[in-house]
Length: 520
Image (cartoon, rainbow, N blue to C red; front, side, top):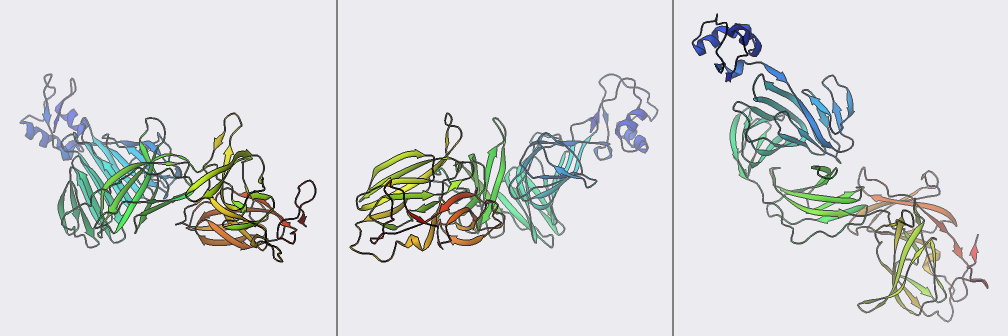
């Protein structure tokens, strides 16, 4: 390495300033064929010194952007939340939840991404004094890390990523490292990586990957699986829990799907959620509404992840639609005015409703209006097949924020029978339906209070419909979540349950002003 002496600096002073030990003076003098007593140098003179003996200065990484809930653990063990713009000295440990990631700018201007569900330590971040030579090492304890290393780094720079079983050393590249239960994997997207285990090493070219087993043996490089190919744009997703069908990749044993989102205009994309699934189906829940980028990789039988595909994804699930009570899905109405009832989601006081008549393949509009009540007096309807759906409206009247429509559900209006001794089945059952993916399994809670502490009934069901024995009249609250650990509940929804008095024909009895007579 060549260094430039400062004005008036002697050889001894230069060695004290840039070398690890003053005892390196004689070695430097020999390299440059100089006397150790040189007291000054002519302008422009450069002195050769051994790079591995030069002093290093501690450097820091900077958090470009970060999701919520990521822990920053200092070298002394102090724990705090990671914030954008934070300066991270060497020795800092980062731990991300399964729902957020972070992007760091390292001292050499490389980028390091902490994926969701990962833990890593910035074990070494140093710059060789008076140079642009950097020594950077990252240790991955759990999950993985993705790096984009500068290609134009100074000669002698070091960038290593360590796992329990191997060290990946790079020279300007884009690569990924994962820490698996009994191995570690390295995938090279661009450039090249030298992967070293305790029992050997291997050079991995671009487009290939290798796995080091728990004995430190690296496998021969194998080609990465191709990126999945999306043949059409994704639809807009409108439920709190949703599933995305992924393109099938031959040779894939699993799929990793990540949702990335920009923190703001001009900001880089950050992981907001991820899932790994055996089948080509990615399920997500409890994400904020907004625009995302879905990133998908196929994973082979060795655990190596292939090239990545990306596709835009839009989520608009709030305010959530009300849950329907009556008419129940596929119910029959035997004459008389039709009265619809539904729940009231927390924070919502206006609703949009649509009713259509089904005539073969056609849906003929019957009613389309906005309500401020959870009861909808549809009125008399001719016999036939009908379908209805609901949506919530948030925000002030001058700036409404309509949520997505819930699913259509149908009911039939039939001529009343000559005589009836049993009321409609909704008299003995409570039937609920909500907007949701029929492929998803849900947990439904019914309670007598919005804190779900009194009279709680919990049910688990496949799809978005539930039939329960009818509880007594009164005010109830209902909420729904996906049947997986950690899934968030939907906002509580309030509804009133009343039992009508039935006429001999099975229709609800009403008084002169049209009000229905209910038992108490």
